[in-house]
Structure formats: C-alpha cells, structure tokens
Amino acid sequence: MIHLNNVTKYYPSQLGNQYILRDVSFSFPEDRNIAILGANGAGKSTLFRMLAGSEYPNSGSISSSASISWPVALSTGIHAQMTGRENTRFIGRVNGVANLAKYEKKVQEFAELKHKYDLPVKSYSSGMRARLAFACCVAIDFDIYLIDEATSVGDQKFKRKAKRALMDKSVSANIIMVSHDIKEIRHFCDSAVVIKKGQLNFYDDLEEAISIYRKL
Image (cartoon, rainbow, N blue to C red):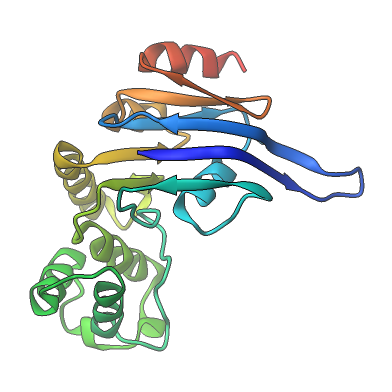
C-alpha cells in the first residue's frame, strides 16, 4: 500500500527543529479504510500532506505502487483563469484518463455547475470551486482516496451526495481520512493510525484507536 522508509519530518523554529516524525518506518495495511488520529499538533495534517505528495520529508522516503488521489474536498490543482471544463480536461490528462469526453460529462453532472462549467473558475463561489474539485477527484478510479473533512463540501444536499459517492468508492478502493468528526470517521473507516510522540501505531480495532485518541 503506502510505505514510509526512515522518514524524518521537522520544522525549523527559534527553539530549534520541531520534529513531527523521527526516523519512522511504517507500512499502511492494504484493504483497510484508515483514519489518522492524534492530539492537536501531533502531525496529522503534516502526515496527510506527505502522503498526498504536497509536502516532503526532510529525510527518508514515502513510496507506493498504488494510485493515490489528491485530498478529496480540497480545491487542489484548480486554476482560476481556466474554465471548469478546461480544468477537468487538464486534470484528466495529468491522471491518464482515457475517455476525456466521458470524464468531462461525468464531472459536469456531478458538480452541478450547468452552464457555469464553461465559465472561468475565478467567477465561481468557493462552494462551486469545491464541488468541481471533488467531482474531478471522485470521477477518477484511484486505488486510495485521501479524504480531508469529506462532508465539508457544498450545501447539505451536495454533502449527502458526496458522502454517498465516497461510500461507493470505498467498496472497490481504500480510504485514508483525517477528520475531527468521530461520527464521520466511524462512517468511513474500519481501523486507524494513531500519531503519538512522533511514532505511528496501527490499530485494527477502530474503537480501541478512538479510545486511545481521546486520552491523548
């Protein structure tokens, strides 16, 4: 699945390097839907960004043979000067989508943008932009979906639609999630990785992981 090989991550500060992970080797289990849990400041978001490839370790490496999405629910890779359709084509090409016309139509229908699909994204509301990014992501068949606050996208109707789409994806793909909402974690995940003192511990039992997380 995903392997961390002697990964060290720190941020420089006036008090010296502040370590998030120190010489960590860890493998995420295959065929599990995994929550990333930890106290505030433990490094959940940093780990998530490294898994997504938007941030890198100071040393060591992260490798995977699986195809991994960008964080679902974030407008990563959306260009404001391009139209919704142009953004879709660009994302489709980058991710090796074979039938771009079919992909464009699927994204347009799911994002519910109607004629605005052919207007520049800079004219979109933040909710419209988020819907476009979400639709572009779930319309591609990744092996692993990175989910960051998945139900924060759009209005209540679209949030329900997004939740159903992610549950459908979890049947044939795996999920790694960061969320402050325990109810959401229970809905999507069956296990967890807890970050504590710069180390990662996997728990096959989600409820055990949640109990440990609440005591941190």
